[in-house]
Image (tube, rainbow, N blue to C red):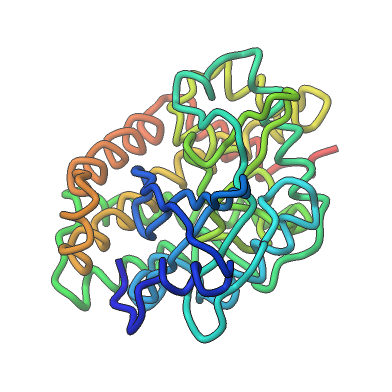
Length: 313
């Protein structure tokens, strides 16, 4: 939790004008989150943003994150911003009274079309305050590792020429950038009682290629190939091998890049990492192993050829 001059609970109590009950919610890897209840039945989510996260290159600047959170709410997919505590990195958000998904739920074929619909709602909404590139983020995280003497997995540098080849292929026929979450691990999806899915936590959000969003979902939930195809077809409304190839390349790119996110978090925010009770180093190793698995697949070069060819229809 960031060191604030005033306890955020006192700040919220003062704004609400009445006592509140705060229940910490475990699972956030960067910021503090808690449920806030009042005696007369109102309920919010308190999000205390830690400026050290963006300062370490692990998130976008706080003002951009707050602006993008509001944009996602206007698009009907993110939680509504109820109040921002002036001069403090404390947000009160609409409490989404639904089921937080896990990897098994995100892999459920019956859930995938609704996840795709949630992404389309987000991508069709107001543009975000910033642009984002997973390739530039990789360069940024790699520079942080080198500058701070943080360990990079053996063989990571050997893959960089392939990454450059992937970028050339993906940018030859670019898709229009849309407002993307860019970090859709399963716990950032909330399944609501009406069957819809909402999306939370805009720490790495920015306008980006929508096929990265899909590839990132597939990477975070470790989709087998048939579920990657289902997600792409559910999102685009058709089966197109060139679009599917883009998603599969970005799946590998997600794992390859976020390997370094966890390495940087483990190295630069070790105190916070310890408090989160999460093994960042093990997660970095696992993501790199998955990236290597996909990049060493005999069909990986064909994906690059498919993307490099004719533009998607």
